[in-house]
Image 1: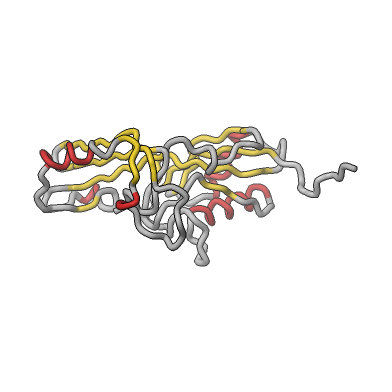
Image 2 (image 1 turned 90 degrees about the vertical axis):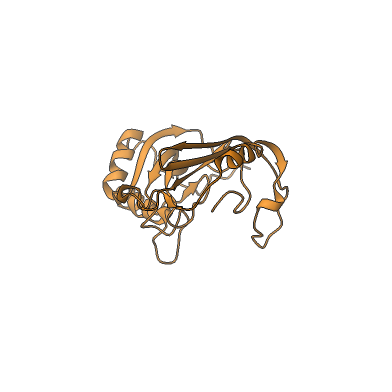
Length: 209
């Protein structure tokens, strides 16, 4: 005998977000209510009058920015079109969090499980004085760097390797410490040095500074 589901009907939205991470405790919901996830829930409550769960593709630490983080949320069906959801939620979010894109996806889509690639971008300012427009956007590193050694050394990390030696112990065993880095790129433009890592996944603190 089939029993009707007790869950209310819903439709799933895929969100692509950007945020300036400086004011926040990271992505994950925190007791102080200052995770990016917390602010999204507050905005969703204001727009839908419901407590809705938001699932992110991954977690960022306190102060870390995001250029295109993916999340999903199940919302009441037929209430708004995706772009109206986007505009309504942005109206209730802090100015430092913005939903860039929003679209309907199948109920089988899962922001965390659907991840194919992740990327980290680090920006280092090498001049002895940090430019004021780079505060909070670049790490001030006014010490000598031997780029002739750094660039080929970093690029050798590309490929599939066991990165156990690069990761911190999170207190729980990893199923596998093998990861694939599709791209490792080091570039300098003036006083700005950028390090870009793109892979199929990262171990805990594998590339985080």
